[in-house]
Length: 257
Image 1 (tube, rainbow, N blue to C red):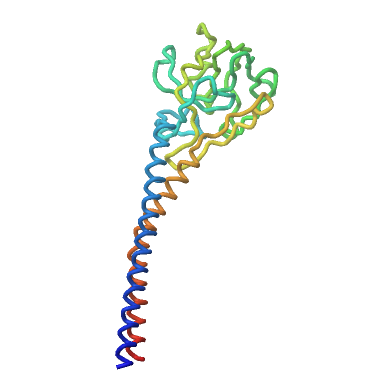
Image 2 (image 1 turned 30 degrees about the vertical axis):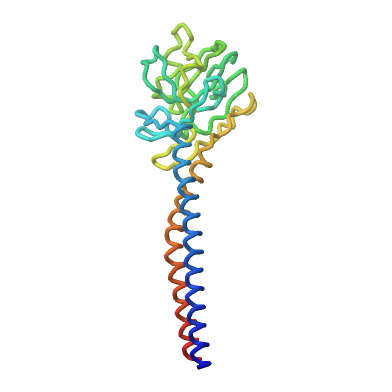
């Protein structure tokens, strides 16, 4: 009788342990999935609010951005644009369609080309590592242009085939566009996955550069959310199976005794 009593108690103890383990697994699994969904969906919503996607139709920004590339442009106020930024803008006198170019001078600057084969802004030669290897800073000379306050002077990285400010030098604004024409600042090439654009360090001697947007944080949140959802969904069933195996093992051990 003593043996029967001992065996029954152990079996019931094993059942309780199995149930507790299963409940713990379910709770942890639910928490992980819930948190993962918040990060995953929150990251996508955050990205949709902060960024706009564009497809670049021409090669005027190669090698930085090629024709057909899909870019992500952070929604920013034109007043926040700085030298070296790659921007998406739309200007009626340029065709009133979205265009992607690099800002090389801002209101109050004097821009010209070329001195010793380099673009100059306010008399300083600018290092432009983003230009195609072996290409000149400009295929034709740019006379000294004083950029009106509130305007931007823009060039393509592929200078030989870019319809940029140099194609509008005879316009009333001397090839410049108002800051209000800017729709976004390009942070990255999303497809193909070339990643974040390199910082235009050649303009640092003229003032501060723009800081990258929150794209890395957004991608990190989406990835972390996906991992938590998948991991949480898998953890619950696995925890239940482990708890069930431990319970059966205890029951069998008790039976042997």
